[in-house]
Length: 194
Image (tube, rainbow, N blue to C red; front, side, top):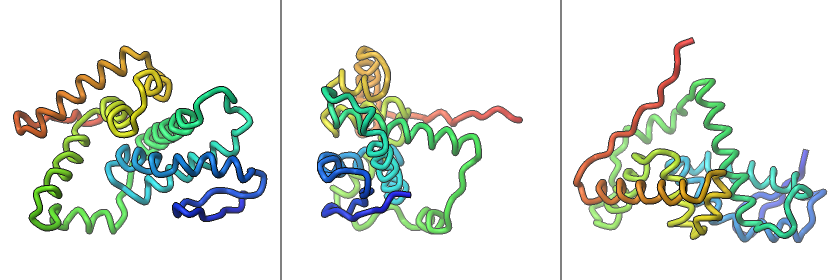
């Protein structure tokens, strides 16, 4: 088991077999990883922090597999995205559960005050939630985290043309949602009976 140390950005990184340089190199990517994880997990801060922590531990334990000439940022985002997909598939197989705090929060009003900015952010988050996972991931990587199309394609493991297509469709669906032109319907995930 790895010993843990809290960093200045309130992230817990393993200590012991890792070097200080490795931890420092990873630490600069933590805020962006948290943003990306929260967006993937639709605002669930606790699950996002767990995902980031798991991704950082995996990056440090597999540091020797990292390409020295490769982009560290792209590598850790790839790990984070693959961990997200793996956890999502595992939850889909087992069936998810909701904590009591999630149930209570869902019963609370969704608007905190009457400010237009808060409403716009809420609508944006809801609009992002209506996008497919593929469109949302591409939109967040390119639009929020400022990855190039090629870097996003590498992270997601798809061709660059697919990234461009998903980005275009995702932007258009989000634009229509934000303008109130239509409310995109998310297709429910279908599971086969066993």
